[in-house]
Amino acid sequence: MARGLIKGITRRQAETLAWIKAYLQEHGVAPQLTEIAEAFGITPPSVLDLVDALEKKGYIDRHGERGSRVIRLGPAEGSSRRKRGVVPTAGKGTAWVSIVGRVAAGAPILAEENIVGRVRVDALLARGRCFALEVKGDSMVDAGIPDGGLVIVRQQPVAEDGDVVVAIVGSEEATVKRLSIKDDRIELRPENEQYEPIPVGPDTDMRIVGKVVGVRERKRG
Image (cartoon, rainbow, N blue to C red):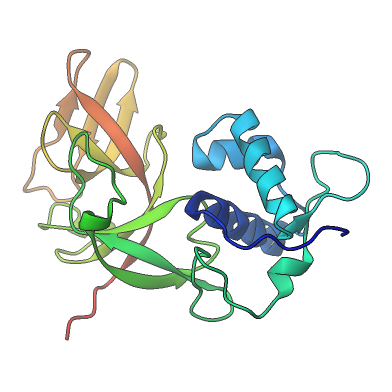
């Protein structure tokens, strides 16, 4: 590719690049722009801006016909030099995900003051914009999520019936529950019979933060 490498890459560009790499590894073909948009919850024009920026910086190559699946990793991605802002990896097939101490209503999830550490997870698990959250309480133990465990969460504003989600109800901090959608009845259900479901009515201020895609036990020193 006849372009010089432009130093520097933003967090969102690095996350997009990591997601594209994981998709290529899993499927053997590049993702469509609409698939990237869905994974990150952004519009296709925004995805196009990200892809254009990554191509200009040498991380991907869209030589040839501009179809929907012509993305290839570019020469900059093959460089062994560490680049500022790239999501760090812990080895082949793994990636680091930030652990947040709290998720509150109206506050940026990955704000610097919220990050309390990092955890290494499978790169395919961490596709998209992800974070880890420590679970407080035993309301989800029957789903294999223990008190003090870490859930790996992919940020997305929507979820389907049966998904385990991180949600904010009212002005409270985030809660981890299973989303139940039955006709016009919506509930956030615990996976422990000692707790009651949280009903979500038309007047309930409820926001889905993301979908739980994995669970890790947190090692303590």
